[in-house]
Length: 319
Image: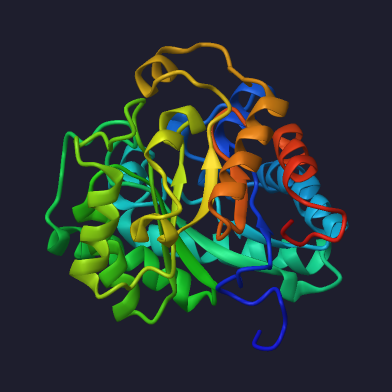
């Protein structure tokens, strides 16, 4: 994709959108039963594939209308061995699941975009454990071995990139970055933080990013923050500090509740889309390199539309 402004990684001026909160939208807004909060089993039926397509369609349409790129995640956040075992999916079948997810996303790209190069297929990697708790930590070597098969499946199915999201301790991120490099895949690392701006492990975001860079030789193409409300981390970001310049993406939660509160919630908290959008705008004014914009838990297409209105001129380029 060299030579076009939708190439990966995004340039300083080019913007890429992502979707919002896939699983929370399916469960709370569409009434879909997702055991273990896993979306990948939907790929096993025509009805499930239609649901996924209907979910992604408005996001892709918005990206096309705004003349920006789109990073299309595979619905594979839970498609690793531990979570798959809870759903009676064997390790042997899991490779096919992850490859099929990439092929499905590529088919969706061909159907919905007249310029397929504007959409990047992103193999989504979730944590081995719970994204909200760092209670079963691996060494970086263990994490590399654990996540490598999923990354290899994404590569074999021709994904454009991989992203590790909702990372809550550095060793898992380091292992994933090393596995991606060994397999020749561009990788993005996205950390989540608690209300105090620290990872669930207690490590600061600055330390996690700097340590991941130091121990991998700056393998990640860039970093993101996801699954946290801007009020949980905006106070620790400064455009003057070198480590913050490595953050180029933001997928915030709609709700300002803590992870513990969200875990106990029986109803979706959609927050205030307009307020969330203005917080994105403020962060982009402070951190000019923020070029990947999307949502996480509780966000839907309304939030992404509001973010576009607040952050993007009609041309789709950074203000």
